[in-house]
Amino acid sequence: MEETKPAGLSRRDMFLALVHSFQSSAMQQMGKIPSPFSGQIERDLDQARLSIDMLEMLEERTSGNLTGEEGRFLKHVLTELRLNYVAEKDEETKRASAPPAAGAPQGGPPAGSAPAESSEQAGGI
Image (cartoon, rainbow, N blue to C red; front, side, top):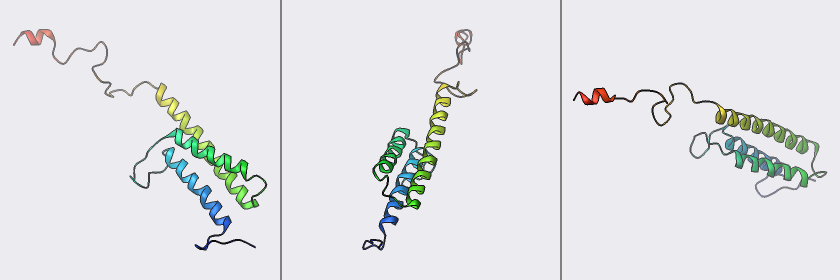
C-alpha cells in the first residue's frame, strides 16, 4: 500500500519532486534556464556540480529501494545533467582560450595603434 502524506502526495511523488527540484536547480546553475527570482540567466558551474553530486549520492543511497519508474527517472535526469554539464564546461574552456572578438574593448587601445591624439597634434595647440 502506498503511504500518503497530508498534502496528498505519495512517497513516490515526493521522491520524483525531490529529483526534479535538484534537476531544475542544476539546469539553472548551468545557465540553461533563467533564475525564477531574477528572471536572468545565472551560471555557477561549481553549484551545478554539487547538485549533480547530490543526485548521484541519492542514486547510490537508494540503490535497490526504488521502483522501476523512480530508478529510470533518476538515471535519465542524471544522464541529461551530466551531458549538459560537460557541454557547459567545454564552452567555458573555449571562451577562456578564445581570443577576444574583433572590435571588443580590451581596456585600452590595441598594441601598436596610435593614441587618440598624437604628439604632433597636441603641439600645434
